[in-house]
Length: 490
Image (cartoon, rainbow, N blue to C red; front, side, top):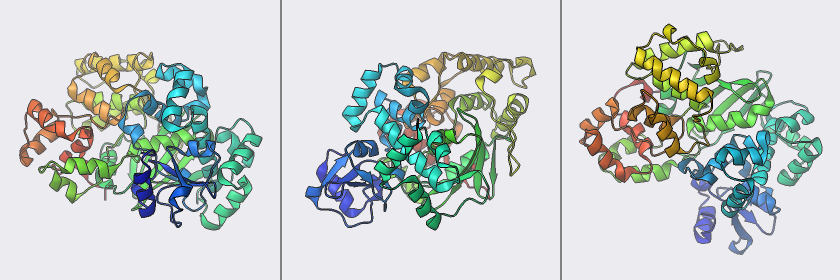
């Protein structure tokens, strides 16, 4: 979008928050870059130039605006709606892969050379993987500076910087303030978290956001010991590269309040990325709803409660295991089966608030389970052990970097995997916005009640007009049934 100057200028003049994250406005006279919704008086058109990423702005010598804080705007919805190499690279960079594995590690995950990835990112985003990771490190550093009392040296290494000097230089260059000045400014406006060690922050999103199905689904399917709904917040444990964490997510009208307790602050970038992915916060709900509303049978559902998101997962392998456990059983039964696995094979954790007891077991931990101890039909035991084996040995990878079509083909080749299981994993674990469940019982009942075709083939043909947002259509169709997944817990 950043190449369409006229459209960008209109968005800046109208201060349209829907375009935050789509592009950034750099002001030639002040050498500052802003989000489109910045509250200051818009600059003259001849003084504006537009970039596709904060990293490109920083690389061109612009610093972040202190009013609108463009580094905290929602991410571009493009990266979650595409499965090409650039989109997959951006999702991996958001997960901190470059900080942990370097550019060669990023390229290896995508199956390209480092030079190819560099060229593709430069062509589309105006910045290479190192510059994009540097911009993310600066944002992580700012969060740690403003929301914790960590010494600056600890902040530097937790944010992914290789030295304190690089950390100081980057913060000064990006924010035009020294790290100590950022902390002093934040102390005057940000309340420190009540619990020592807790990092409290706000997760922005594009309005509207309907929390009912999002948090209702997560709460209704919560695995005891791993997830819970408490005091208006969804809480769960997180398995992270350097340790583990506990997160509490609370919906508010203009943001999601996030409280993180981490055993290692180096996991902050990954934890934030997983939470945003879980809640689908980088979606563009206006674009999604406008297309789905064109179908007159869907329009009343959308008008009644717009802004529904797709509830995802913090770990693709975990969700795949839970999807198999939930085959042809009730939600309650699926939770019971998962809780038994957690108790037997999950790693215990200490939750200061109580309620959460374990991390969900990894595929490696589940690879040694005795299938005879599972209270499942024999065929489903085979399905589960085969899946766990493929995940544990690396022959099957389900993550933000997965190729959606390839992952579908690998899943359908496993015994016991039908279209429903494959598509629900594609929708919630892989994040494919076009995943569709025409064989789902709730979808078929909703279709029949709304006057849509109720047979899978006919419904799939009708749903072609909803592409590429069929996963969001599923969320609206599920609301026809009065099911707990559609309501915030009381």
